[in-house]
Amino acid sequence: MFSPTFLDIYLTRLTNGKHTEPAFFKDIFERGIDPDVDDPTKIHAHSEVPVDEADWPQLQEVLAFRDRVRKRLRGIYDDLESGKMEFTQRAARVLFMTYEHEGQHAETLLYMLAQSLDTESPGTTPDWEVLKNTWTIDKQVIIEVAGGKITMGHDDPEQEDDKDKSKDWSQHEFGWDQESPSYTVEVKPFKVNALPITNGEYAKFLESTNTKTIPATWIQHRGKTMIRTFYGPIDFEIGRDWPLMASKLEIEAYATSVGGRLPTEAELRMLWETKEGPRVDGESANIGFRNWHPIP
Image 1: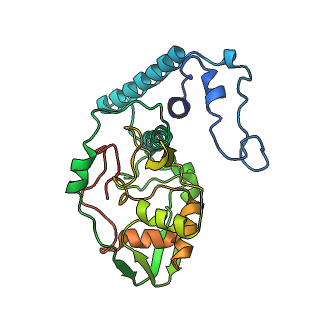
Image 2 (image 1 turned 90 degrees about the vertical axis):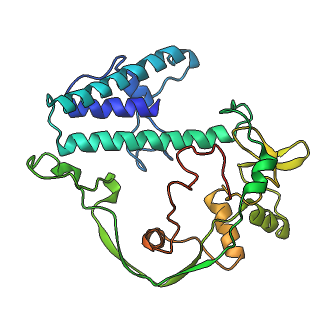
Image 3 (image 1 turned 180 degrees about the vertical axis):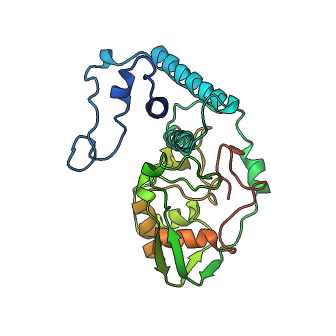
């Protein structure tokens, strides 16, 4: 419910209108899952939530609210298209931000669903053995990045949205509040592995360090280590060459063990903009739900 409530709050601010009913949903669902959520000295104040389970809305009430908010959003798009509503920079910011926010929560939800044994399959279970024989495993190579200066963040103060409504903002780069203002970082030359750590590489690391704790994306199932998928746990050998999905601390420990470290945000940004970097071709990339599982 975070996404429909977030969307409704910002649509209300954009239109100077009233919240979608039930209006109290904004109070119980805007809370979020931020760390230290109950300590206002560490994070902004959050709303109170029902203590008793019986005081929470029923599923059908929640879904009906979601549908009303989406109908409200479609109405705003209609008004923008017809010219009834002016397409200002503030309107563009709200629509872009709420769209991106929806995607962020969808991604989080997918991580949660992938770790549950109760998740219903998204379709016909793949023929894993056939797929495994079609996958090409790339050899690990080292990319050398020369370093230099790189600009981080955006010059996008939200408070200026309404100052100059005649401004051409068609090429404007929107960002979140903590991404402004932009700043320059000097990045030293560095080397980086071109490919992610694989499940198989991490398994060898765990064995060499006699570590028993496994990533949340693996599972001890039927007496052996398996990999979680939306289709249920699969044999480890099927996904041995898939990219490892693990916590920051787990990946950091592996990087240290092989004489490396995690890259800084500036290094990642520079790598992204390097022509030898890991940008991918849309037609061949495993994105946009092309598969409901990783590939090597």
